[in-house]
Length: 229
Image (cartoon, rainbow, N blue to C red; front, side):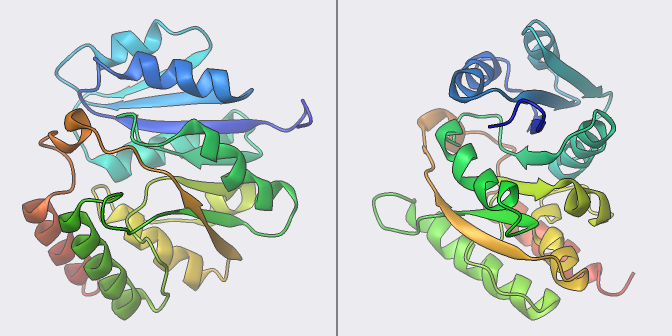
């Protein structure tokens, strides 16, 4: 990879003090990347843990605004810092940093402007409830926004500088991921999907802020309501 190409990894986090340090170190070990960590109003020491890691740009929302808001803050910061490619990934350790190279390769080759990470929906690899939720989310995203993708809820994605700058969604919470699909379609951005690995752990699955059934319903309502306001 050319040293002149700046790859920024944007990580939205909320109450991840116990794992964010390990996530950062694993990303560092996987490649020469710039990191932007956005703490979305955590009540624990997440921001302090991220700030204590050398070379990390650690930002913080004073109140909890939602995952989408944290991602947008990180993307704006990365763009201002001169990013050529921006990768977004979760901060709970579910995503494998080894997949970053697979996500950015089509952009570095000037083949696509957006690359979406797609989780394998196989029994034994993805919990059954997530498989069902994933299929529902994909169908709703297609019906509302006119573009079908295999994993509309994945937060592991890569954007060219142009794509990151033109995508404009007002969504602040979990519906952000689906509304990005709308922006890709509306702006006719070239897009592809690549398979990614996901590590479902007791820690990541037990977090209250994750997209569970109730949050999924709330997300659906916000997506539909957004068509009229």
